[in-house]
Image (cartoon, rainbow, N blue to C red; front, side, top):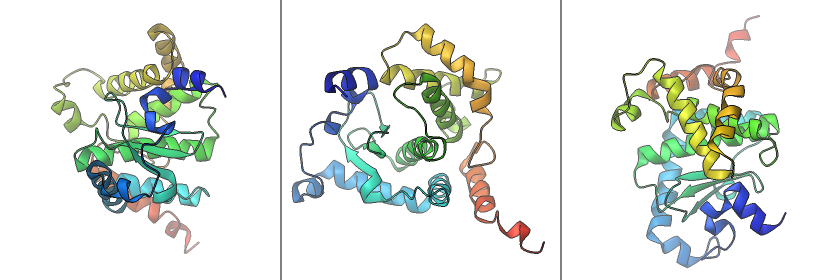
Length: 233
């Protein structure tokens, strides 16, 4: 794939270290870099404590796509407009160490990108050639990651509208697509609308929309106990 086309059309220009890392991964210089160290610590905490992330990691393992911290996650400097991304070419989640400064933010980004990784594992998404596939995963990520939770929307001063959750999901999916594809807003809106109902109602692997951390804990508990229901049959 032509590098210029790849950067210009698929959003790689937002993640400059994807093309040229300043430090070799695992080097002493990188391990001592403050942003990188903080990012690694917050990532580990998210993987160990966030019920959203724990459920997704468990579901990916069950699907034959175990996510390893050192292989499938990378803390990097990014464009100032993004917090993370999923690089389908390398099956790697990018966490923007220069833009993620709070644990709650890290938890949401890890969850959002793990939903893309889960879709990549289970559905063989054609990220580069099928915009409907991309739109569907963006809708699912916005819907299931907590991006549009009531508390987050109140913090953004966005609340009070009828079907607000759906509109938040639609808007965030639209912005994500426009950030990584050089298409018009009208075309992106058309694609999102075409797949919205089907993808909004696909709650795998949560089984429900986790509107809060409490919901996510219940979903994780149910997922971990899913085989026990048949034990006495």
